[in-house]
Image (cartoon, rainbow, N blue to C red; front, side):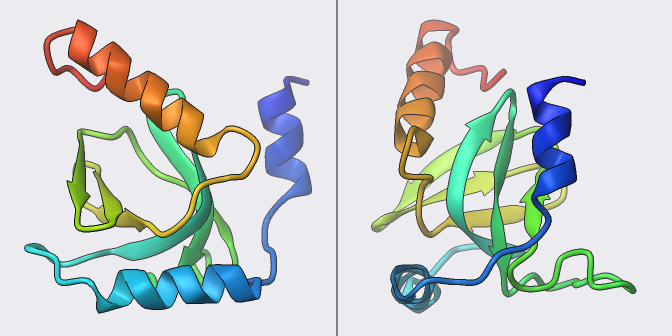
Length: 125
């Protein structure tokens, strides 16, 4: 079993910290050009996707799959844009605001992806 599969099996929800709540509130106060699908905390780039803890998803799903506090892995990212103090990650059908990054390496992985994208003439993959 790969490490990724172990994480998927072990983690499916978590409680929000006071820090998470403050970041979410600030992110929600920001004005965005397009509709936001959800806000993510404790986020990091994994491959070409974004993994984090979801808040305020516009479609929680019939069984609460995207309910507040659940972990989510997005589909492949097509665009990353800085809007004010926050990054907006766009997939084919959704837009996620990164309210906070995972402490260990979340922001470092974003910086690495952006450097790779710049070196590959703008491609996010």
